[in-house]
Image (cartoon, rainbow, N blue to C red; front, side, top):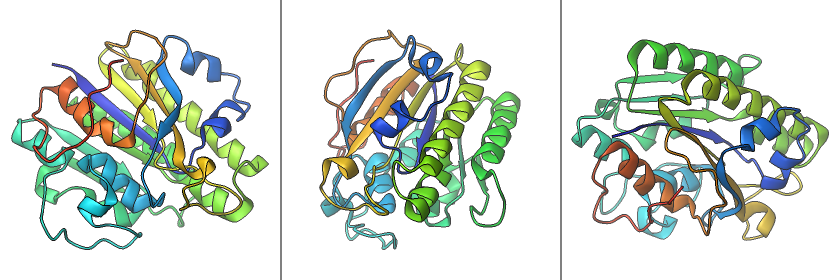
Length: 255
């Protein structure tokens, strides 16, 4: 069974990734299996999209339709719960507190919250800490959330120079993980949604289209077909040997 590092760059548009100007972008994509045309869910808002990623259902099923968490009327298990049930070790590093409800505390072996608004280079700091933890504990699953891209999108605009610079920094962070762990882990890079102007949440292609990149262990290096954000949890369960929840709607991505 394999191990997975899932890296989510909040608000990263596929064209933003391709136009970010990072000279090592080619290295990131070389040998990867990826698509620049994956789809997120409506509303294309951070917490609903994350809930759909980790629970493999649409927002009308999990009930989260804005950035405020409310308990599910009919509870269902998400990815962290299924990994725990399979005896897997999981870590979760993030910078936006509202994501805390993605996992019950007892399903995590490690968690770290760094406030996005209280220090510079939060994404880089979290990445460095994640590298330290993975080297020390070798978890089966690590989720690393990077929130700075979305912050500058709202402040300066999607596709602004500041936004593209943050995506470039995110590429460097991903490559730091790749260089340290690609032989042992499958790395998955994804966004929760895109954006336009200074916002997101609509069904416009700019908001709904996201990149998905698979690198590292077990990756064949090919163009992916249709991929939904709901496919990520079943795919991670398949890689790690966990059992998907019966309610999950996504498919396993062949990478």
